[in-house]
Figure 1 (tube, protein in one colour):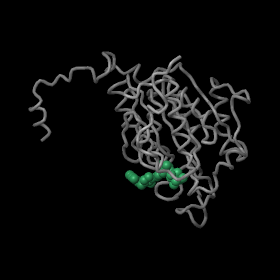
Figure 2 (tube, protein in one colour; figure 1 turned 135 degrees about the horizontal axis):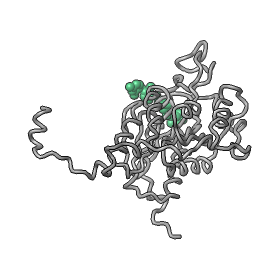
Figure 3 (cartoon, rainbow, N blue to C red; figure 1 turned 180 degrees about the vertical axis):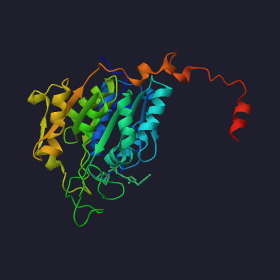
Figure 4 (cartoon, rainbow, N blue to C red; figure 1 turned 135 degrees about the vertical axis):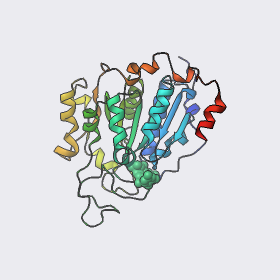
Length: 294
Ligand SMILES: Cc1ncc(C[n+]2csc(CCOP(=O)(O)OP(=O)(O)O)c2C)c(N)n1
Ligand code: SF4
C-alpha cells in the first residue's frame, strides 16, 4: 500500500531543545510513528500541552498545536474536542502538569470518558524548573525541594487513579521501548474514549534515581505474563504492584481497555446535530453582541 503521508510530513521545522538522552525524544518518536501508521491527516490532528519540558512537544510536530498553561491542557483539549469532535485531539505533558496542578482536570476528563488521548511524560521530577519533587517522585528521593529528608509524601499512582476515575484505556509505556510505546499510542488514538498512556520518560539531568537502567532492570510486559486487559479487577491488582507493593518489578503495556462505555460526545445532547463548528452561530447582530461585552 502506498502511504500518502511520509514520516517527515509530521515533523516540524523546529528542533527539540531537550537535553541529549531525555526520554521525551522517544515519546515524540512514538507519537510520530503512531500518527504516521494511522495516516492521520495533519490538519485534523490537534496536540495540546501544558507547561514543562515535555509540554514543548507540540512545537516539534507539524499538526495543529496549542501550548496552554501549566496544568490546564486537558480543559483546553476538551474544549477543542467538543467544538469539533471530528478532530483527533491528543494531549501531551509532564507528571507535574497532569498529576499535580492539573490532577482535578485529569479525574474529570476521565469520568466523562471524553474521546481524547493523553500522553504523560512521567519523569518523576519537575524538569523545566530544574529538579524539584513532583507528585510521582519516589518516597525518600532527595531533590532540590526535598534536600534533607527526601520526599516524605506517598506518590500519586496514575494507573490506579485512572482506573478508579473511569478511563477506558489505561496503559504504561517506557522510553527505552519506542516500538512498544508507539503501539500503545496508536491503539490509544483509535480507542473510542479517554485513553491514558503513562510514559516512563527518564529525565537524565535531574532524576538520578529513575534512570533508563532503573527501568530496564525492572520492567516486564503485561501481555507476555497473560494479563487480560478486559478484567478490571486484574488491572487494579497490576496497577498497585508498583510503586506500592514492591519496587522490583514494573508492569508495562495495556492494563485495561473497554469499548462498552459511551463517550461524553455520544451522550451530549448539544452534539446531536453534529459538530458545533459546522452550526450557524445564530447571531444576527454581531455588533450588539460585542457591545454587551464592552
Ligand atoms: C501556574 C504555574 N505554576 C507553576 C509554574 C512553574 N512550572 C513550570 S513547569 C513546572 C513543572 C514541570 O514539571 P512537569 O510538568 O513534570 O514537566 P517536565 O518539565 O518534567 O517535563 C512548574 C512547576 C507555572 N509555569 N505555572
Ligand atoms: S531537564 Fe530533564 S526533562 Fe527537561 S529536557 Fe532535560 S532531561 Fe528532559
